[in-house]
Image (cartoon, rainbow, N blue to C red):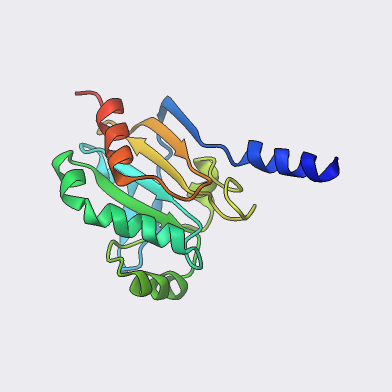
Length: 168
């Protein structure tokens, strides 16, 4: 009985969550793996997709970003900037970026943004962000939040969410 309860609990907590939202996106400034900084509010005027993940040590997380990069032209056609965000050291995440051939600079979160966007503890580790996406429109309004404990979302599905949820 206890085993059934544990399995049921795992299934319930690992379900996909996807929701339309209309909150002002919390602002942040973070360093990147390319030794620059990104301030979200400075990107106003174009939509932004935040991709929170466990990062270093999570092969599925890096493969997700690699597949997003392969569809870069499709994201660019929609005017969307994709910002991957991790709570790792630069050394740890760049090693995995090289291993998986990912070139998009990762934002290095101290936990502030992950907490503000409610992604902490939504994955396999309570102290790290889960596999989550946040779509922010050109005015800085959060339009979609998607949480994927399966650690995978087809880039075509992400693009469809963007097309569906951004005001035309």
